[in-house]
Image (cartoon, rainbow, N blue to C red):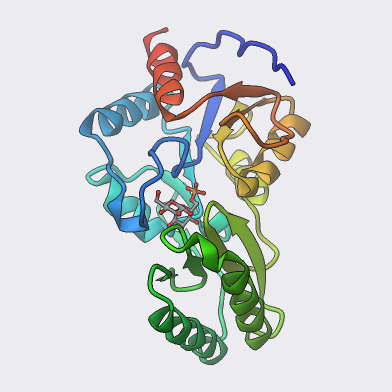
Length: 248
Ligand SMILES: O=P(O)(O)OC[C@H]1O[C@H](O[C@H]2O[C@H](CO)[C@@H](O)[C@H](O)[C@H]2O)[C@H](O)[C@@H](O)[C@@H]1O
């Protein structure tokens, strides 16, 4: 399938930029903690955020706490855990409530499973759990079965989210689309033309909302079917596009 070229846009007060993180701004690494955030990327995001009056948000599967650590000293507008938590313009972070007893039971069951399966890894995000198997791809089916069992322990509060060599249990009823909509209801995003760039299945809800609002949706990577209207090949192309956007 061919995609139309991305129209030229100028980084000004009419635009809002929403950016996925892993696979979009950062190259995929063997484990979540192994990602590299170049200073040049932080400088580029800081510059773009100023030019857009703060209307630049990270919209990630990572928690906001982790995003702040990765991108320090920046503290950008952000939605974390696939849209289930969001830093509002006031600086307050809105987080979903979780049943801590059930959550601990699900986490402990998955942690016990990872301890028996070398190459797998459990990421505890406080209200979500990510079961990674990038270093043990043969365990994909088994990991999905374990995640399904853990989901049942949570009693309907969470949903399964597939990702790149990962299966996640994330709070139900939220998405990257709902987070982008929420940002666009408040300053500095209110009334702006939204652009969203993402690379994964979790980003499709964001593309759908941005398309509905008449904005611009861009999927990174060549293979998957997508609702996005435009395509970039990889992280290097995203960075080059952002640099060009910042220079106009
Ligand atoms: O929505 P995103 O910002 O793209 O976050 C999606 C998940 O990204 C992270 O996992 C992925 O990236 C890791 C580092 O490159 C990689 O090792 C892993 O295999 C990928 O699935 C992150 O750890 C998750 O919490 C995010 O949900």
